[in-house]
Length: 352
Image 1 (cartoon, rainbow, N blue to C red):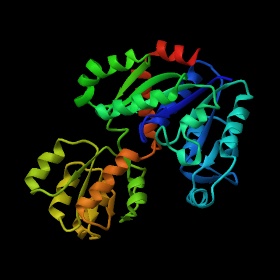
Image 2: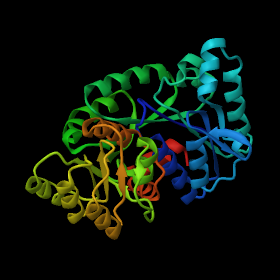
Image 3: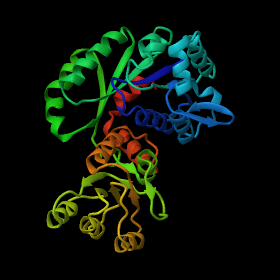
Image 4: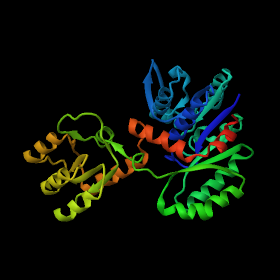
């Protein structure tokens, strides 16, 4: 049984994109494989079973016919977590190990999809260090390099990985940190005996948020129906004078504007410079002129409770944590994986 376990040093590092990239690579090379997620945190109902939403998305996206009840070992629903904290749960590790062993009986390679950061699930005895004692595998670690704190955490994770064979994928590397990383950090990591498969640069599309995600998470009111699901790559706050705002908007692409519902001047400027959506704060509705212009241009208008600053903070968190779902993001993730990973090192790591 050949198992590749995709884990991350910290949460929201890009594990789902890495799993999709690995899966597409194996498909392209004609290597049979299957997929499981030992631990999941987005409960959804499918086929009469509760499974993990990310796992269901990945399996379907890769064209794998896996029964929903076989996708995920443990799903961390709110009810499950409360019960585990109050009363404890037994046999969880055995349940996960059994899931992985059943997957391996096919004789195919098994892609395992980690949850959260490296130590997620520790309170249940299901964090990566616990599971790796029972699951012989190779580990692909995904990391966002955001400064020396990232390196400290990586070194701690490497200690806890012990003798497991490890490779590293650095994701969302920003231009500001690229020189530091390439000049000093990467050589240091390689001296620790870790193969670095590649670095995927920060990408605005992958950091984007769809209008439907905004609507759901912000519990926004949509003022008229719109077609498709526009992806917003950048969010600008409309708190300045109109002439400044226009210059600001014209320098941006695929942007949304977060602005008070009473600032019709900024709203009009945003519509005239190509905004992809308007987020109107304070629970205030726009005037009829703005509404008419927006509907004519097909620009969604969302009304959100809360002041502009607090809404902007929520959107910022959503940009960092939004799941990989939008078709445009999935395609971009796959393309970047192919472009920036060293195929010879990847083949060696996968033993193909």
